[in-house]
Length: 230
Image (cartoon, rainbow, N blue to C red):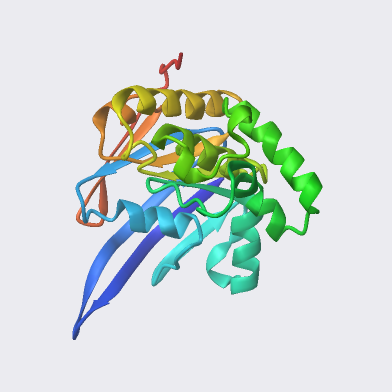
């Protein structure tokens, strides 16, 4: 599904530059559930941003679904993000002035789907994550776990080929984290490809493959072919 070869990324730091990714080689197949672990500053979120076409590498090759990403225009990149990549963030990234259904429906708004239709579809996705009865509530009226479920429904509504989750349980208590991970594992069992950046070992232990990063490099890549998810 995706392949990165010799990916490098630096950021300017005054008169110098910070070399964040140092020659990343990575392949992920369709249907995998992968966690990416590493200390703060190891480059894991930068890597996820490049995979999600939110940022571009300085060097190297990135192919997604057979398409060379480094050569596409910003318009094509925005279209790719909206239709093929679902994002879940630690901070939820919900619009406070819109209710749950309207937040979930946002990707369809950018696809030009009419309001009544997109909101009706959004309610169905809220039902999938157990929040149909909270469709009219704004984020401030929802718990952290409920807001993350809204974010998951929003990530799913455009039926993306891959879901990227950056510390999706980082702001949640242990019980709510387990509930969110169960939703993600169920999605993976249904065939969805999911990459999760996390610093929590118990979260990574629930994935089928764990990639460890240090100082901008992949230092270990452990797959468990016998892993069975509940």
